[in-house]
Image (tube, rainbow, N blue to C red; front, top):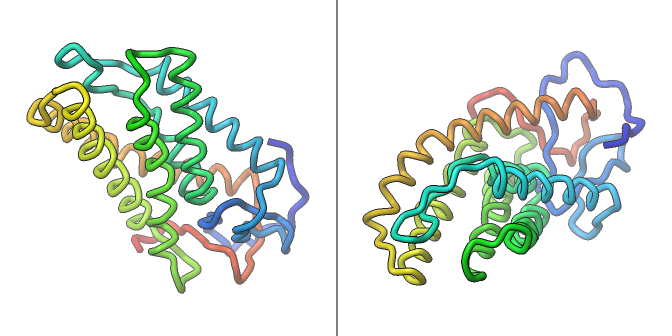
Length: 225
């Protein structure tokens, strides 16, 4: 991403900024400001990059485990770019990244017949974390590590442990008694791993884009809450 002229960061500022609305704007003092009505070229470029990462991590750099003749479990970090988009760019961007990434990924590397149910689940992986952060940050300028953990945990629980097994049982007759236990083990590892990775990526963003403080900006700090 091309550098953008921003004001010098104060040494006392140890947090980085999240856009919990729809897309970021750097027009006011260099801070990452909530912007519900505008999708810029810069925003589209970043979303396209996250879509590409989602496809690569999901379709290429992941391990697929068949159960009952269908893909019952997929181990990897394919959901990370989608959750990242939802948290850092807002629920709308997260949903777009998840849905388009699933659609393009399927047509590039199809596995069985296309089922829109899984596209919906992919979109929710971007929408839900953005909504959780938006809800928990209401009235406050700072969000700690635990809300980030809740956003990841709630998203993966609802999509990977509840929705996807339900779809597999409804569409293919694969019992949830088979799929849910393995997914519980997988997500017990994935949830803390995703939380740590998202926190680390946020710190990296702070170094690349040394945002200034602004009253409308939302900060994610190293504190618990």
